[in-house]
Length: 237
Length: 245
Image 1 (cartoon, rainbow over the protein chains, first blue to last red):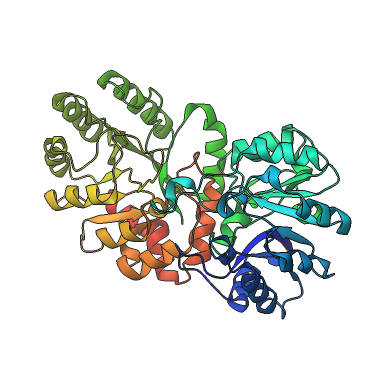
Image 2: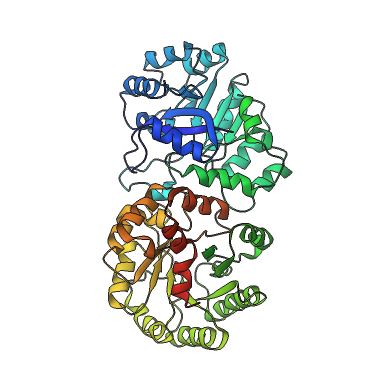
């Protein structure tokens, strides 16, 4: 069974996707994905973050193998309070979409460190070249993420949707607290490079379903015939 | 049976490309190392790129098929000469255009007339980019113009994810336009949309390897297309029909 750290839930305004949990769980199962972390895609654009988080919790209540990862924002106290729930393993932030700098965060890292939970940071939601021309959002800079991880060495950080070069830059720092997912890593050589750089143990399986077809992500790993076992890496978080 | 309609032989990653294709496809069309000499290759450089394609494909000519890369910014005579030589003398099966000139440009007309006489399909790069667009890159609307001007030429608008829902909708009325699944992120929903609008007869499986993981692009098709008939058409029958194999 594959553990997937990058599953989205809800409406994404630019794509027609599965929007409810049950059919998405069935779709993931067909690709061998039986557990994972789910975040709210809707809260990327919708600033009614508390309602998005409640919808996320409610929508996935019937599927305990899939843990919900609420969207955090320092102005939304309720979002931070959700982290106190035992079944919530992490919180996710969208600095580039929500309009603040990563280094401005104060309370979120403190709460997560106290609770020993993970902070999830997607660099992007889409390939920037394919974004709606009136809704263009630059990717979060790798340098910002690295500076943040150095500032909070005891906070585990999982970076989602990093491209090949970005993931290579992040993982080559060999920071104990920094992990990346595989959703945007592509091409014929990247995994070999990670293996050569001995950075594979901080790379986790992520599908970015339902925006991406989950079987595509799974077959990408089957193509890579190294010693990599994504399910073991996920357990570290 | 799997036919990968969109592959490249980039020199730097050729060993990995060969392995990826051995693992995912029975046959493939090679579209060349199209950026080997930068964004505006000369006629001589085009000739060299096509020589490399010939060398790469001729060692297994029953499974590896060649496309002739053309830069339409070069002289009409050099382009027509190259196409005739490759198709008539060396058995190249298609013509490939990249990002050198938007394909709605009238300069394409004499080349397309020759392609109609040669009776081979065109594979044209296409991407509705909102960032990092090359000056000569084609949007789906450029492909629409090209297809309307040349109804007797089959045109494959490459990169379905990057053409988007709008691009698929734009080509839907044009029966001589196909699309391939190559490149871009492996979104399933756009493929479902194309299946509903174009039907499986006008979609070809392509990976864009080595730019993309062939396994990932194949996984997108296998995960999205459930009907056996549709899978067969997309994965190889359409390619065989278009290339006259």
